[in-house]
View (cartoon, rainbow, N blue to C red):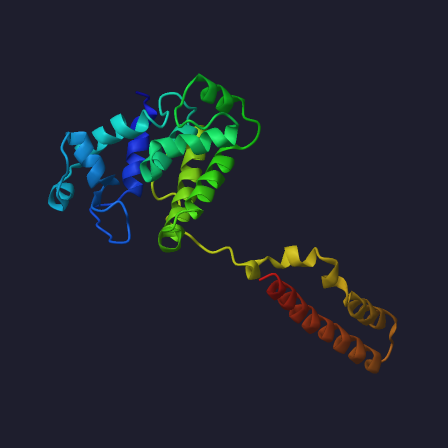
Length: 250
């Protein structure tokens, strides 16, 4: 097993919470992302009760992840970063589906099994594979009938996993709260400097130039007063122009 598996498990437990049994979730009783069916299969029994699922320990969950998800998702074969993406995808949607999506992205037969051909194609992929893989995962999720219910959460999860995978590639310490602060990038917050780069912002600059010209050439108090008024009018107009331009990008 790779050393990165330890980090992958820590991140996984950061994504998968405690016991849940949402009637809208087809997985049924689940803890640490382990469904009752997966737990029963791991224990070699026909079924387990919700109470037994609720009593699942993190240690047993980690064993299930190692044996039933990490290996099947190609964790020991795929490049760092992509291995975690496939692992997380596999826990969420099944290892076979995770591998098939990756295979579709890299252009090999989608059989759901990570072999030499898949690994070679992944390593030879031209472009940003992390972005492409994340996009394919979301494309698949949008086809699910439960997307309207869980889609928003899934989309956030994929974004977090994408960011964490990039951190793994760079060798950074990865934390589960990489997106703990989700400040909105409001288009209205565009800086004044960026707005002033647009030619429309200078459409009324003639007013300022005229005002300055009056100040330079005028000799009487009337000319100075007119120049000051023109400069003031330009400043006020510029303020409202910049505000209006910022609002238009919203």
